[in-house]
Image 1 (spheres, one colour):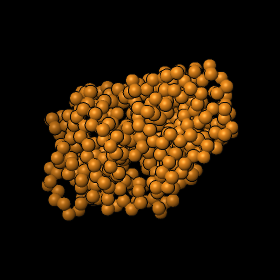
Image 2: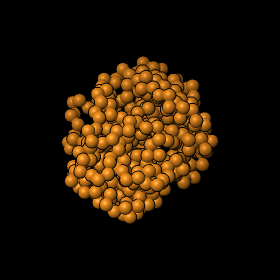
Image 3: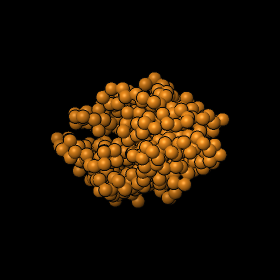
Image 4: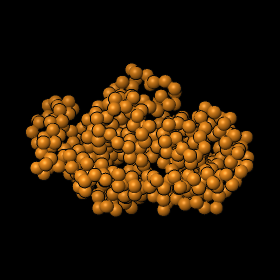
Length: 400
């Protein structure tokens, strides 16, 4: 940990949405920050958090939940909502006065915040498209989105990705961010523990999402000796349900219920085509499940030597791997133990300390003491440049 990291923020303004893994990541990090005396204001955009999510947020000390019903940057025709969200976030920053702005996305990382901005690249449409479809996204359809992502990565004071492979993909698609680092996601091991294992395979994730490739599990399930269960949403962004044909669908489970299922599952399978990190795989590993994962660079980076890997298009290989584990309980237990041992490298506490280190570096670079005045001056110039692009008629003096 660097010397500057001793400068910790009192409050962080963090953006998120209430769909998918970013919500779980944000609450996990907010809990960790609270243990170090750092409060979080969580600005949620998109659909409002449901009652269970609000209750979970309410249990995090010092967490203040704000919601703005704005379209997310990857949705169709988001421009007007992005402008409204920008004004909302900037007004929120003026009221909250955070020391650091932590953006879990891209477009808002280019806004003229007063505080230094950390941008976390959890995923992106262009990398998703390339992994799922095998070719680049249609340029005309996604040109505006790509420009927003590139601008956010360029203007952020620090870009974080959950794996080195994801950081490399960002560089290929948008150019390497000027300041970047890898911080692995983490989970609290106390929430996930092995229980007496049952003879079944479990998967979890957005069932409708081709990136998760749960359709491959659905296709091979009839030939397996064990039942295959899946937890997760079956309705995509268009609202159309896409239920599996052969898997036992458990619905979208609360965190505690999913942890119980993972604890009893002998095998966790996710033959993903695209998974920049994969919190579900980490939760399964902490629960002592043997892992069968898609052979993609990000999952190899995290789990090589502690999981079985199958090419996403190799359904025969997927079935063979699952059949072999069902036939060999000793190997399954050994693989589950390996996964659990590796998973303890990706804890919530380690993630929190890494983010505190990153926040400290930002505060050290943009501090208000004499040593930081030159950098502070460059910071103001940079934000004024942004302000002139987003609001050309706004008086410049308001930022100074």
